[in-house]
Length: 104
Image (cartoon, rainbow, N blue to C red):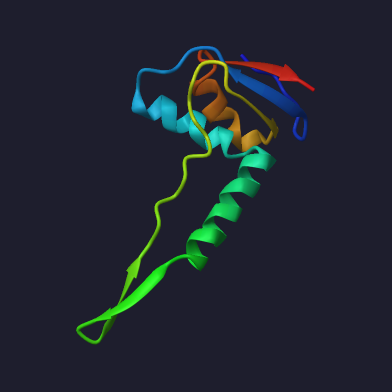
């Protein structure tokens, strides 16, 4: 089991891809804690908002929203760095057999 202190920087590496969809979504949620991924997701959101096309049909505005890009991908060998937060302990415990951790 992982034993970290709050605020520690940790690098995680995916050693095995989970077979269940819930395991993959948990890892994706943890990957989005990385600062670089947060920045890329926020930038993409602003770009999509700027590029949203609006046209009028029947007196109403209709929006053509671009799809979001997939920044985080669950694959063997993918790494991310995040600061440990105690409320993430349950998520880390559920995927500990799929990831390895290294304290920075």
